Image (cartoon, rainbow, N blue to C red; front, side, top):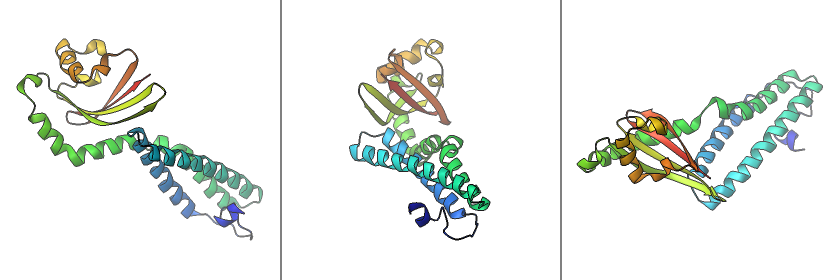
Length: 205
């Protein structure tokens, strides 16, 4: 009943390629990735609830399209089967093929880069050698597990190096602001965005 309503399985003998389902799948997966990003950067309980409901819809939809593809092929409706199979493949493959988290990070930086640079340039002279500045980009977590996100301005680029390769001066400057970088229970990953800006995510457990 549900599959006939959304047009996955037709009650007549027509065999057609459903491009609208492919486009809707792309929009849905992109929206889900934006929601995942937002939920990971926030402690908002309502957002977390919406995330889990959407994730359930995501898995049910993927399973439904997969079944529809098999049934369409069994009924020798190969065009409809191909389109529904492509939708199922988009649900699984697009999140890996399109790393939206990096795109969102870069977009956030570009939109407010002038503000960040203004804050960096107004820092006291003692904080400029090397110049490392952390901007809070949100956090989330539960059950003693915390995920913390920062935008980091680092004109030396040492934020991207392992702990043992960073200079003493850099460690002294950075750890005054962000001591979690040196905690054994935490693991940090830095991704270069543009110029001297990096996106840093830290997982503590």
